[in-house]
Image (cartoon, rainbow, N blue to C red; front, side, top):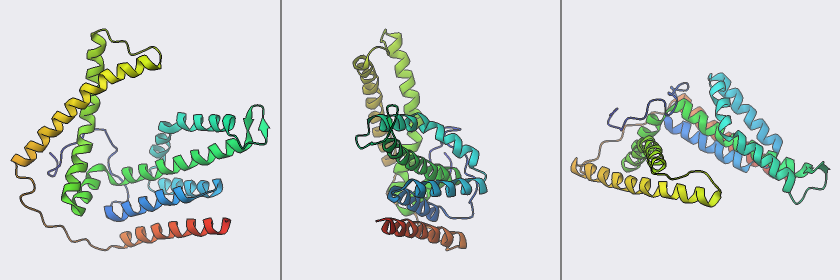
Length: 252
């Protein structure tokens, strides 16, 4: 237990670094504005400019290398989108061999938007950390805080249970290879016991919380102080949305 919250698997998420002087709430607001702005941007240059700003912010907070490494998780998805859109986009009128130019541009728009989403969320996690987010959620609503805390703390347990179940099923002769139908049947045989055990574990956690008197008393919420960093985050978030909305209206 750490500060009354369930402990996390070591190394599951990076340690919180940078931007420590800014409260968690304004950082969450800025991240939400970033997600909304990236979703509303309709052009590749606009998304590229926002991605460049995120890279500059990551460089200023010494998070550039971890951020670029996080892109490896969506590299194959991005490459697949580019290939599929270039090959199968129906509105392509210009082609280079079998790949359409318009399809490539449409796929590139989605890829850059995906990288923008990943960058905003990863910068939030790197600069804040899961425990700070959970404590902020608990300040907003105590039930929400305990729900987020229990969800994040049980993920490593479910991953370990999944690996153990796969090894046990393979020891009993279950084949994980073959065609798509066989793979689906194999993973279904693994997922059912994992889900059942997760439900049993969740019921046990609920009983433990009830026995320990959760909900019988409510703690006093701390007073939030308005700092210059918080004001800057709110202002940047609003400015981000205004610039994107203005650009969208101009391009119509």
